[in-house]
Amino acid sequence: MIALLVGGVGYIGYHLAGELARQGHRVVVLSRPGSVARRRRLAGGLRDMGARVVVGPVSGEMVARSGADAVYYLPGKPGGPRESVWEAHYGVLKRVLPGVEELGARLVYVSSIAVTADLLRAPPGSVAVEEERHLVGPGRPETFHSESKMEGERLTASYRGRWSIVRPGLVYGGRYGHFEWRLLRLACRFGLAPGSRWAPVVSVEGLARLLALAGEGRADRLWINAVEPRSMLQALRRYCGARIGLELGWLVGVGRIAGRGSVLRLAWSIVGRKNLFRSRHPGLLGEAELYSGEADEVG
Image 1 (tube, rainbow, N blue to C red):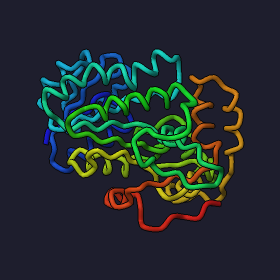
Image 2: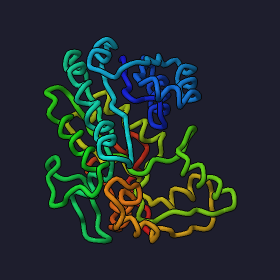
Image 3: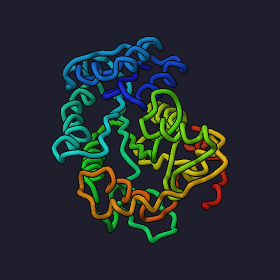
Image 4: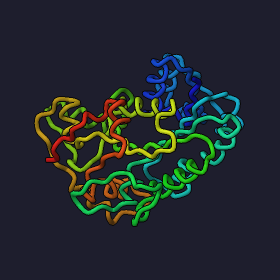
């Protein structure tokens, strides 16, 4: 299989490329020049594992040239001006979709757990799973992030070919982690696990395995909450052996009054409602080693 990673010079893209390469697939990464210039180490790491990094305008023509069997759409922007967030989650996808259609490739769209959170608006303490029908729920988007991710999902689901939508929780673990996770690992060295028991998480290694399954056709026409059955505090304790959990979920409360382009508003929309996120597809999560059949207690 030839797998094309659009926006793959990033945290998730690096680990997904590694997983696909280990399975014997050919990996092509399509990225804008600016992304490669800012992330030279990541681009170098991708090339070291055998991925071909193509730098240029992200367009349908470039996608069609790749000859890909599966196209992964990975760009993610948690906050910022509405125009730039929409461009990342929807605008670029609209430009590359004609190339996906020309190839007849499978399309895998990486969305966000914020979509589930904003659509369902489940009562505090309740379990939130994917809606039974795609993008049907009583809620509304709290942020530009979830608003544009929803439209990216709609565009993906309008594709007449084979598609999957994966909604990750907060991603942790592995090399080239986000700045926040590097800070958390530093705290772990002192035995501290700061976080929230209501924050849904997913390991980047497990997410990569789930995305690989989707690229193989195991999740066609499904939208999936990619979350572990444990909280952020529990995940940190398992990940780095921290002994003391510091509940900091109350801090996200300020996000309720922040602007729709604020990362704090996004954090509140996911964590502040105090829901447990699960999936209707535990079999797929189990294959990706994200679900063992039993959820940890929240506390």
